Length: 475
Ligand SMILES: C[S@@+](CC[C@H](N)C(=O)[O-])C[C@H]1O[C@@H](n2cnc3c(N)ncnc32)[C@H](O)[C@@H]1O
Image 1 (spheres, helix red, strand yellow):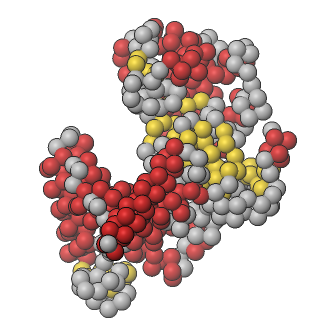
Image 2 (cartoon, rainbow, N blue to C red):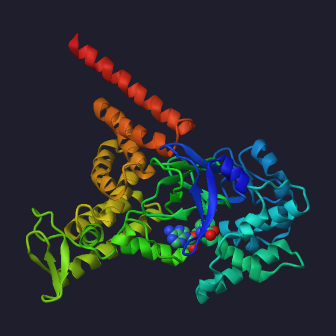
Image 3 (cartoon, rainbow, N blue to C red):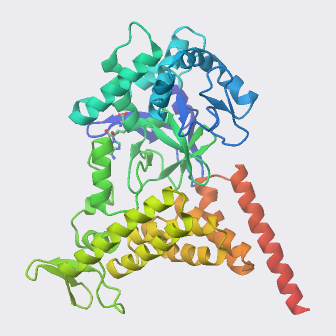
């Protein structure tokens, strides 16, 4: 593998506090592909998706096991060597066992089947595609808590029941579940909608930073790492494992819980410094009571409450707790209404949540941004383009604050803004937003994917319409 990576301008080193790390042995430019890899194994997040490509249209269940789906004979053929074995096992399973075939169990069953097929040379191995790469992935099993260990053991038991192999080691399967937890990646489409999970053992060598120099994107099953900045020779390739919109404490907690390390990236080393405390208060804390003031609150132990950092106004704990309680209740009700399909009721409730959050949180609050994202999605589903655009516009300044200039989510939000403006006939606004989207997404997503080609075509169409409108006005 070293040789192959070297040909790609990469090398693997080990650092005492990080384990294996991927380094560059040449310069990489923004948008350039650093590494691409297909999954060792992958599984869709819903049984109604194609098991190979994750498509959800023109789906047909396998006529033999009635469990796994394919979108057509092409995908079925690609998966046939593995599914032939899987199909026999699934066909024998009782109905209630089939129900316990969650995406994680499914992925683990496929992992063992692939290993078996490679051991028996039915499926070929390559330096980038073999089980020893999986075995080398960190598992952190000795740091996993007891409750989680019990869960892994139960899941391992289920895998063993499905596989029915005499020599299976439950401990080893449990450890592999722990490996998946800190190495597998969520496979998303170009708009970052999750489709499934995949294990990409070479890509899994890449470590995390909350201020990464690279991004992981998918085209179908293929995972691609792209440089999002100029990366000089001799640098470590770093991606983000988590949602980086959040305070340093929130990010560190997420990393510790799932990946068992304390991040010391350029953002995290600022933990506890003045700027970091202020940013946390804006993103996750409360706002000033005076609505004409844009200040955020800092805890004041003397008054047992909060004081605005900007105008000094005091806000009592009791009032905050009262609104926070109402907001929590309403958020829970709204979420239940949405998942039960009561869309109009859910919309009303989320609007109430937004009102309460505006009283409670700063205008750049992450919680408020999430509520507005939900409202945006709901309004788009209802085809209320005008209101959807209002919400999309409200999220943009927060996206610009919490994500770096080149970040896929930021690019996608400009894209949504462009689409809504286009639908509403705001040609110049659409051109502006599509241009912003292209500037970001051509780096994160490259220019060759159908998604990017479509986006560029939309921008060109908007530009043509803009020129036509301008010339008509002159006439
Ligand atoms: C997907 S693996 C990355 C490769 C790993 N270093 C190895 O040796 O295989 C994730 C694990 O790498 C380590 N890791 C990743 N990023 C790190 C960082 N920024 N600082 C310290 N450890 C990190 C943690 O142990 C984490 O659970």
